[in-house]
Length: 502
Image 1 (spheres, rainbow, N blue to C red):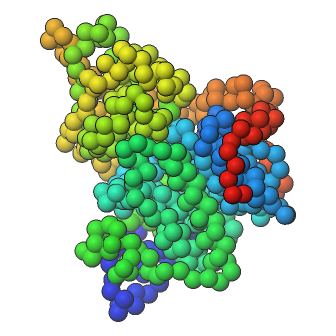
Image 2: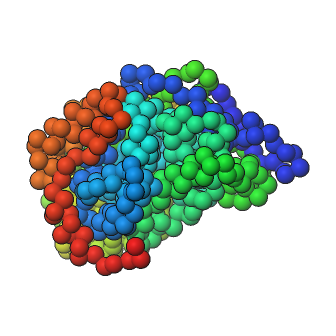
Image 3: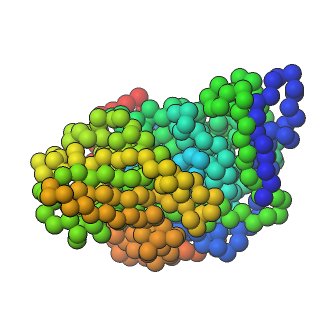
């Protein structure tokens, strides 16, 4: 790996483009060859994972709204598919609709380091453009692996959340790079597209604060759509704000660490295999990733606590990130509100731990149902759960060795009689270092579970066959990556929505 140091430069420096981070990212993307077997296999897993959560969310309102917007932009030629909708639409709108479907349930892959990310959000825009431009499955695989490489590098090297900048700023750069790799564009073109994408998708983290709204699902879809549009403009010869990262009025200087910014981004050498996708991991449970281990821990502790009415308090010792983003350290009263939105509840580890402790299970719909959140005994237990930052868990969260990195914590349950019950879990059971790491059978099982009642068994088989042979798919066969669903039922649901402009 090569260390690239990123700092602010005054305009008078005239920083050569070859020394700019955007150029370095573009060069890694355009230098991406065919992925090795392990990386390609993991990319297939993530295609399956995305389809799983997309079909499970088809009758949720934000997904239906995005789908309706996309349906109003039918393609005059080529175009791309939309989950749950017949026909083809313009690729940027397909990316919008499919990206929302993938993100809605907060149930696909993750990578956590200096910042947060859901690298699977790169796949919907790449797939849309691949269909529109007649690319093969091998082309798509190359693009996915390149996008993951860039995304992981940025998340490792540059923290956004410390400055309350939303993590999709890294996503848009990665998507632009993935598109460049897939389409075999010149480095110059990808460089311009990266800068446009970053410039137009930088926003604050209010989308994940307080009363969290449906924009949480839309934000990455917006970034994917913006990246496609940036690539289109760059291909037509348009240029960008440069240098977008290092400029004296740029990203680092005004939105991150300021004029004294100094970041190190590790990027692969020319010819080095692109294997960052193997460092990422998916979710077994539909909730913020930092709650995954706590769900598994709650299920384990349930056998030790006895009647939950006797619980006096629950204190979760965890990392800075978990405490301040989904714990009581966020200081969001909404995280304890029984009337809060689903998006808020899936970012409330006190709620999640209480429900998992009561039910011994987690379900992507039932665990968030309004009647479930308002259950009186749940509310009583929920409000007894709090978090505290533990320096040791923060250190483990940032351990440079991925084998030792930890995203969980320690639970201390105190009963009314003074009895204390403690246990800890470093990573979720489904994590690569967990008790039951997800491998291909796990992804297939997740798909079949979420597709039940939505995708007929024979159509499930057809989708899985296409996905597992992604590298061999021809230019007209990428349609097979969209499982057939009951589009009539989807249309009935969509017809109830209010109309917009389109």
